[in-house]
Length: 365
Image (cartoon, rainbow, N blue to C red; front, side, top):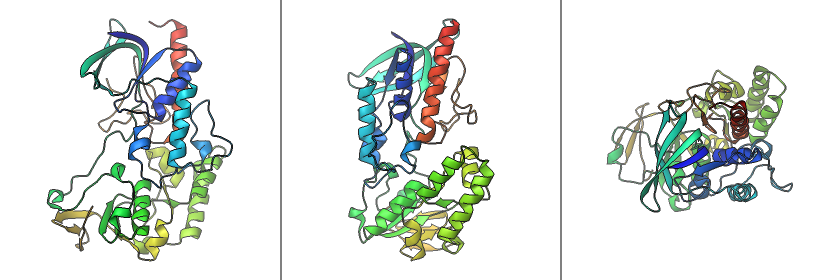
């Protein structure tokens, strides 16, 4: 049994940020990570053309800025280098290949008991901690939706985290299921590599440019969200026009308000909308079923494709709403789970470190 003050679960950006903030207060901690490297989604699972969708000033971790000459929108490899430098600067030493299997709170001892599996030595390791921080990430588990007949599909079915480039899909019929930022950007990448690309867009979405989102996030610091939303929607209409003919409708709630209320982000266009307007990328509705390589959509259209004590709820996200999501009971915290991306990680990490130093200073047992 290893006794620690703080145990951080996850060496992704949120866990690293929390570790750095604790270091500033000289609070000892242990950080464990089930993968063999830090920020594994960025190192191993991010597609080649990925850049941060938000401007760099909204994507810095606490106590360390990007280099002055870094581009406004940070490429994947630059961000990975930034994380490596961050780990070195704050001397963060994660215990890799350590998977937490259970945690229980002992009311008598006022401590958390954590059981983990050391995959390097195939042994069980145990920790006793006063504070427990869950920082394993919003997208820590792959989720491929269950679709009737999916098992009969003879082509490739992959999660976006396994996608790297559209080079190998040239000339093939490919369906992208999901119209978030990853789905829209992967569709663009496939199409520009010569794949016959379709994308499923089932729900209304806001389509914005990177510049509009940067403007919105800047104005939201000083103006009411409804005013910012009105400006963004008006600008988006001017830039993209009416996309309803292409099967893309806007939510009734504005983009900034929607993000604040639900965590759902606007889609930042990288050129996908232009290809949709030209008919190069086809927009489809929801899927009814799959029969072999035939996909039937809810509009009855058929197309052939080639490839294709908890503070958290059942989806692994905080029960409490933002901005009170980060603190649970009995020294339990979560970082980076507010569905607000890198922009909110620094806030979570600072809040957690400040609260821990306050609790320790107040003499709570």
